[in-house]
Length: 217
Image 1: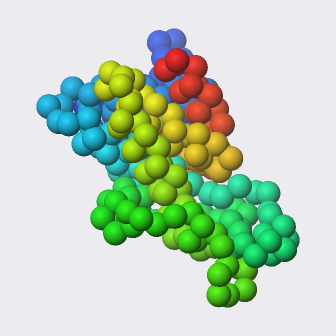
Image 2: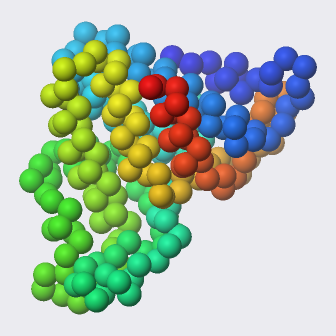
């Protein structure tokens, strides 16, 4: 679907360099647009296409596409005291969720069709505590799956549905961190190839959602 070397080639007249925030956001946006075009063109029911674009977006986070891995981390603001007072578990600050998103999404869709967010958040028979990475991921999946059902039932062209589905995923992660996390030797490899390379630890969550929202309205 994509040509890796062409994808990371510097613009005409520019030297190979570490990509800026705007450049990383642009490349991820272009990649996601390619996913929409790919899935929209397949001879499948809309529900399968929407599932496919969710799966492919999570593949992107896992670093199993042409782009590097993007580490998902929880927000830095800590709400533990508020949650303790209200009998709720809480999402710990700065927690890395490095759990093969696309594989876990498939497992979730098979096993947790009736799970509700309150099943995870409310401390029914135990002391309030910090949620694990697995539980935080499950909360995100519950929300994404709810939106998937709503979007599937919409009366709209499939490309619009797919654009909205990706937008909803990025919206759910708006207050999280989506940090570029390339392999340690990526920069050296791409410099030798005359390509640009991805920075380590750049958080694109807010910028990516805003860019996607602007370009798919």
